[in-house]
Length: 523
Image 1 (tube, rainbow, N blue to C red):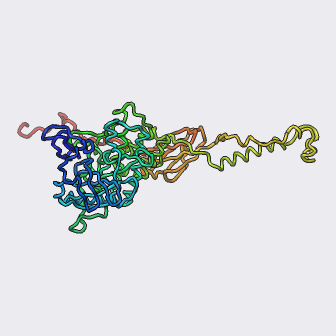
Image 2 (cartoon, rainbow, N blue to C red):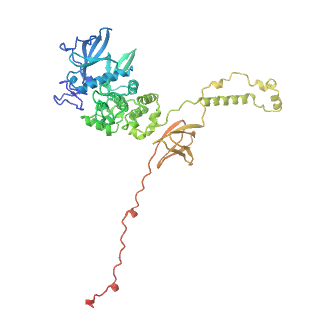
Image 3 (cartoon, rainbow, N blue to C red):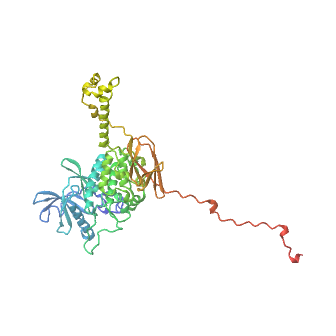
């Protein structure tokens, strides 16, 4: 939703300039807060006998926000009041009520808490929520343009936790954008996230009044902000929680690039890009962006056109972001079909950092070291009579025994990783479920993904087959690695041009002069 700062008219069709006065439209959060209007009938009023309206502190496309005070418990609150003109529209009132119901039933620290609902004496709906002191992410981006990767990831990780609780309640927000991510301060922690505005949230078990089974939303209806809409939203298809995963990917991209990936002058122009345009590299808009390859792949997977190629929930997205911050890839990222990454290079997928050596390897190393020390200290002594001396025991070993002084074995305390002869190679295929064969034709595993054991430093040729599809790669592993093999269908051989030609008619021999018959009239 955008607003004309001159005439205060709301536009939700993707317009850039006001059709009335040609003023450039701004988002609701960019609207300057209106000065206190002494004629505002709500200022100074008492709602429900307990909420004193002190002043107007903000306004948006649907309603006005006031600072209030619960006079019974002396608690500061925020009161959101639906605009008078919208209060006469039943469908808008229903959505306004749904916003209150959606947010209040989640009960998560990163979701704005809504505690009460009612109507003013003039019939305008309102709800009471916690008072937030801070600014939304849109204001931060409007002022600073970009946000560094660590801060952006910290914000999105909190959003993941909040939306995980939201989705667990059967609620899809559907309008995640910087304006709806409020940053406040709590317990000395900056950038504490509060997600607000559940006005178009989709609730799987909430129905409107009237005919049973009638939902507030239905397939084919398009709701949301075009810059943050998923392709399935843009197409008016049935939606699920993965639209929120897509929106978080857009926000992470915007924080790093300084702008959203898809912009346009019209609503449909933006939606078309979400449906068909390839994701531009972040460096195209911000050459100074410090984005790791791992984090770039996380963003690309979150913004996959096909919901099945994205992270399947916000928990997977959160895990992938945490891994990217540590310089590695999560399993969900590694298993992504290459086509979902767009122009991203598959070299980003390998190698995956090594895991720590398992305990049994260290135990074997220690036992080997003990055996070696025993051989040095107690082994046979060269020279005449060595067998006799050895048989008499340690007390009678003679001068040779003095050469090995009893001391604490500190060699076992040296933290040196043993040189392993074999390393693990994790094999994944696109699509999964392929049989893996080695170059000698032997079957290495029946179904991918799987793990092979390869000799360190030697070339390993891996062949994969799934039905008629085939794939092949060769690696020389020196450490634990992950490889992804893309399976290709066999190319159809071109038709034989000789067979394709129509059969030639048999050429008749020309008549010879001796074969000609003379008609009777000429004889």
